[in-house]
Length: 142
Image (cartoon, rainbow, N blue to C red; front, side, top):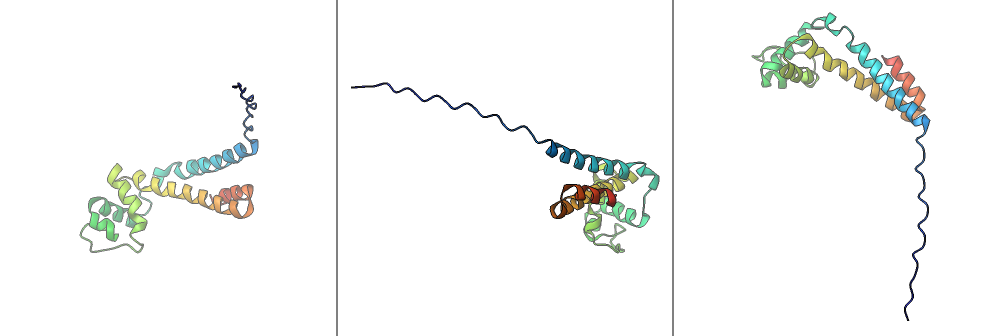
């Protein structure tokens, strides 16, 4: 004897929970912090000229010679090195290689590193003290 079994009715699909407004507010506050930091760091950046001619010379040498870049030399002959670790100049060297040597190609990477530092500080404080203290720490660092 055969019988036909009816499939049980499917359970009604549950609605996905609505996104929490607090999550969006937190994301927006972090985005506003980083955007405002970027605007303030990049505003009228060219007014600084080369900022520091000593390190600009090292970036120029690094943009022309891989060996000068590796050792942080301020001349392409590698006779004089700067007083910082060579890695501190590598971002400027690569930027000068890609975009050409000018004040913006040397200073924009440094400004963006500053924006990243504000983000890292905010995230570190947020892990210890909560979201809003992290935002306040980021605003105070700028």
